[in-house]
Image (cartoon, rainbow, N blue to C red):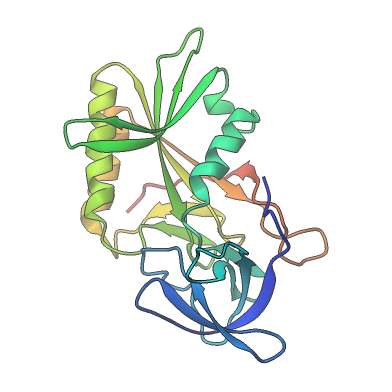
Length: 243
């Protein structure tokens, strides 16, 4: 999968009100871009960072630009648009990239389930030997020294999702927490115990209960060293549950 149009490079001035960002374009024009990320974006909004925006010609949109990528440090790119990971995971699974989830003939999205009234990101069915797989997708962009951490802020909603996944395992199905690593500098994913210790505790409980945890990294940088137009997941990243 790829961006529909070439991205526009700029420099980040500031992010504010969570969903807005001021960006300076190469010609000097300052624009307001939509920031499609509800998290803290810790380490993903350095002052004067290089950023890349997508542009829409939809006259009904209030904001013309959407913040897609950021250079977190020299040579490292992260995708901050949390509207992308579900599609990235679905595309990778259907393309056979994710060997652990190969063999399913059907993939449904946003299916209601669970006692806590959740929606699962992807529901895989139609496997000849395996039960249905309930797949919850999470975007990982918090990177420090090669380590990736999730979450980047306390997430009560994420804790709920872990409980729902454990319930699906108890019901006899597969349950999968799928980390889409949208940061080229991350070599390993860990629970962010220093940010949300309760989430880390629940994640380890979920693993003990039979919830599978996968992490796959996106190829956000092309062969020329510049941000790529493609968002494909290309390789697995280990998940480390040690404290």
